[in-house]
Image (cartoon, rainbow, N blue to C red; front, side, top):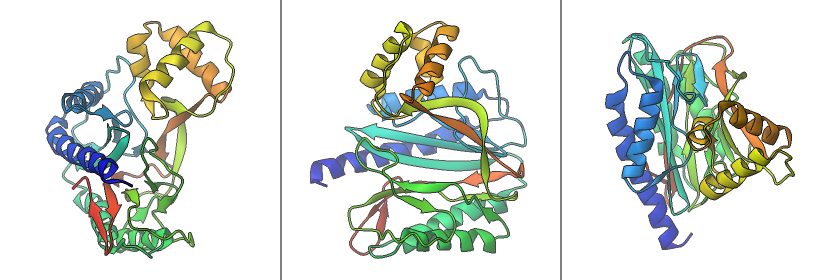
Length: 298
C-alpha cells in the first residue's frame, strides 16, 4: 500500500470516528429509524465522503444488516438496545465502525462485554498472530463476562473498494491459520449476546450488492443495474436508495428480485439471534503495524 492509499484509509477512519460520535445524539426514544439512517448518511456526504454501505440500525435481538425500508415508520422504543453500524468510502479506501446504546439502562454488562472484547482484541493483534487466536481472545473475553459470542458473525479484512476482502476474524476460537501482516486492514467487530450465540437469516432483505455479471431480461432491471454499477460499484446499497431514483415500488422490487434470481446481485438478509437474545456490538477498523495495530476509527 502506497502512502496516498494509506492517507485515504486514515481519512476514511477519521471521518467514520467523527460521524460515529456525532450520530449518538440521534439515538432518542421515539426517533424514526429512517430519519436516523438518512441523517447519518447525509452527515457523511457533508464530510465530502460516501457511505461504504447503508447505515444499519439493528434493535435488540436483530444483530446486523437491518436498514430501514423506504417510508418506514419504525421508531426507537424506550427500552431498546440499539446497534448502529456505518462505513465511509474515500477514494476507494473504506472504514467500518459500530456502537451500541442501551436505552433501558439494564444491559450495561452486555454492551461492555462486546466493547471490552474489542479493546482486548486490538491490544493483541500484531504481525504473526493468527485470526483464529484473536477469535479465541474475543470468545474468552465475552464468556468471562457471562455472555456468549455470536459464533457465525465475524470481522473482516478490508481492501480498497472491497469491504469484505476474503479473510475473517471470527468471534470464537478457530484453527484459521491466517496471520496478520504489517499493512493489513481489518474491521474487528465482537458481538455478544445473552441468547443462543448464533444468528439466522430473516426474510427481509433491504441491502444488496453486485455479485457477478449475468444477463437480465427486464428493461427496468437493466436500467437499475446500470445505475448501481455507476453509483455504487461493488459496494452495498439499500433498496430505499434505488426507490428515490426509480419511483415505482413495484418496478424496483421486481427488478431487484430478477437481479437476485439471475445472481447479478446478492442480498444481505437482516440477521436475528436464534434464541431471541439481546445482541451488542462494537467495531473499529484497524491497521496492522510493525509492533501491533492502530485503530483508524478511534
